[in-house]
Amino acid sequence: NAGVTQTPKFRVLKTGQSMTLLCAQDMNHEYMYWYRQDPGMGLRLIHYSVGEGTTAKGEVPDGYNVSRLKKQNFLLGLESAAPSQTSVYFCASRAPGQFNEQFFGPGTRLTVL
Amino acid sequence: AQSVTQLDSQVPVFEEAPVELRCNYSSSVSVYLFWYVQYPNQGLQLLLKYLSGSTLVESINGFEAEFNKSQTSFHLRKPSVHISDTAEYFCAVSRGYGGSQGNLIFGKGTKLSVKP
Image (tube, rainbow over all chains, first blue to last red; front, side, top):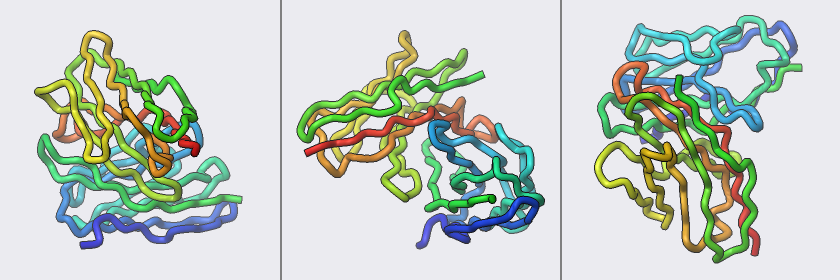
């Protein structure tokens, strides 16, 4: 049981390039989330999904797109990367229900030059 | 709108000293409250949570937090810290558990540095 995994762990992009971050979970969780973490800012929700085929915007969605074609995967895309998107990105998943916590992946450190 | 305020961005303490990490939230409705811990270069792990019932909740490694509805606070305490407690701690709140209500709003984090 690997939990939540993220690919890649590190990436350096040039301004304007595109890339996709992959999040995978093997816990059969319905809910999945993408956050970004910036120094002194805590974690901010980018997009989330409450089930396969559904996505919704979070607090800071601009410049990002997501897809949830399979229940176990949640993809975060940057179509045209900007230096302001330099951050550490975390994926999380959760089962529905009152007592269920979010489980986090190890993060992806992205630098946009 | 909900918000979470962690009053201290950094807290340095000596080993075996007590520590309190402060968290206040603003919400007009009932909330669920969480403390997450992030060790260096790792993801976040749930430390403890308050959903309902007893206002004092405990973790397996000696931390505790008390939900105070009148003061809208959820401070984290440990009577004696260890070097291994050095990490960043995040307070978070959600309005519920279904749909978007289960989304977490995080504070900006408190870096706990335990010195020998």
